[in-house]
Length: 432
Image (cartoon, rainbow, N blue to C red):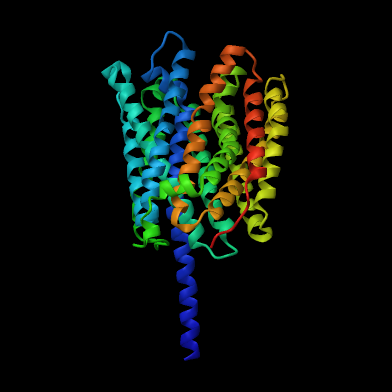
């Protein structure tokens, strides 16, 4: 009998490990697909601009392309309220299945859209529709997936589990940059413009059926009750009972969002357009940056689980980001010192990794279970929409308007200062 109990214990432990892997992979795939698509779009913004948004100048096409990149963020708040509330009422699994299928549909529209030369004005409309669908689904994805990870973890595993939300972003950015490097190195310019840029989007579509299958087979962590309290709209509850958390959370998320979309996503374009760095070099550096981010997020999760000091680590990441922003952009313009700029950028990427994990942990642990998915979705979506969706457009415009290559650095420092103040005010708490 003792042997039977021992075997049963081993099988149960093995089952838990298998279940944990399923939860982590299932929760990470959708978020990874979102960042992969956004990364690829950002890297191929110049190509997409010329094919779908023809203009008299290359700058005009690029500006319209990055503006459409930002259009996808407009739907995030709506998606966060609709799909986040759905996750709090009907369960995390149901919401996550909906988000990954909607995300796949948006990706397909972009991957197979005919160009402006082929169908005229309908071409940019299809690209915009794809970005709107991606934005709507992404609005609910982060909240549902992050809460599932937190609620599936043990008391001393929360940081490790939630870290996969950000690790998946780093892996996706790494894959996107790697594909950009490969395609720009191997293909001719004609091939890149005719079909090569579509390849990453088509590959991203292959993730959808895998994600749907895995998400159907993970365990649910929350089912809404029929009590009067549970029937209150989660969105209304967030706006009334948790308004301060909502506002401060948005300002906190701003720091990591602005750093990610400027330092990680926009910088390859900035390096190529402003300092004429070769495209393969810019993509290779982004591969290195994504790898550094993955390691930084992973170690941050371990730190949080051991020391329970999310807020302290968060404050450190913001101060480090402010200190490193100016020298990173300045050294990019110093001839013969690209390696030094890369070294400073890698340190900045470490700060981003720490920030992504700790900001998420502070917010998701502070919210009660009944509104957790809605709250995380709304905070993340409004923060990313306001500050992430506008980041590339703002810095592109600032560079043109001022002629100052340091404009992105000053913008970044200002945003980080506001986020630092909000983090100092935010109260760190840990709901069950």
